[in-house]
Image 1 (cartoon, rainbow, N blue to C red):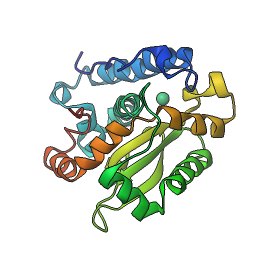
Image 2: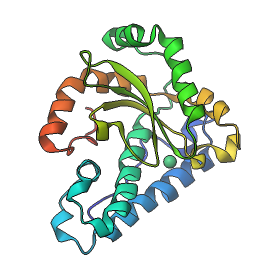
Image 3: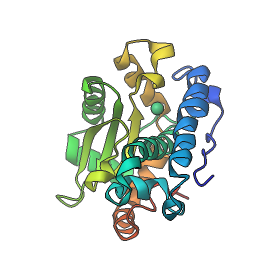
Length: 224
Ligand SMILES: [Fe+2]
């Protein structure tokens, strides 16, 4: 079992009332777990890939045999993105970014509220299943960008370092919010882990370089 399901960094119910415990249980123990299980299963007969991390696999799909490439893409992406997503939230979240991170948000979006509106709008407009991101790009001195990805793609596949992510697959919100994705996006701000996002921002220069050198090995690295 090369790939392991990381434990949630909090209890299922700790994000209540914003995200319900049942959704958290299913999302982590069933959905994320199935990506991990399927990734291990699909790699079973490919020992050359057994030592590779999920993020390496996602960023080096051209090196993965074609017959398992689509399955590795989907399941490694699901594993990487959910691992980032659990840490993007916290029971003691809410609040707002501070320091240089706050300055960068002001510079690139015109203000914190404008950034949040852009993020919510991107999440609401994403057609089908996917993710909404705040990422640090590699242009204009590391400009911040809000973007979406379909399926389980990650901005790092375009060379942009992820700082914050929200899951907008229906399994993330349907039990509580049904079809009202905009309500979920709004509620989610109450559980955002700004400490984690700030840490990722502060480390993003070095991380981007590390990731290039390691071909993605450190994407899942947990900040201290
Ligand atoms: Fe999900």
